[in-house]
Image (cartoon, rainbow, N blue to C red; front, side):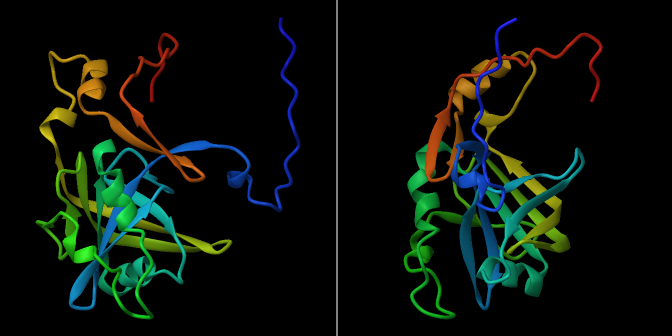
Length: 200
């Protein structure tokens, strides 16, 4: 048996997430803001369980958190790799306190269908969520959890009978965020080697 590789001790008092790269989805969260709307990219985001729940981390000082608390709903857009610039522009700083992100109205969006809000046009997957709960207290962050009330997917990104999963990933590559500060296009994949008899 080969020897284990040597590891470096990390101080948990310093964010571990700044010391190594980790892989996460990159999504754009849409919220109603005043008479308009706001978009913000997030990478600390994931399905919550196997049913229709989705959550993301946010801080109470951000407009996204305040908007979800105030209005009780949000949208989630999963952009493709070709939309990385659009996702980046949604992260631009606001002009001033209470003013919207400059250029936001020019981003390609569509109206949500079940809740007030916007989603990215041409995203691979979009979710519309009603707020289920907010869990504060993860340091400076909070977990915002929503119940999915509507969802749409681009046909090329959908799994279907007669098409191998690897072909779907190849023709509709995924956008991955490599925290901190990098991104990747995922177009190659392999089946995970689950042991015989494995069940969820």
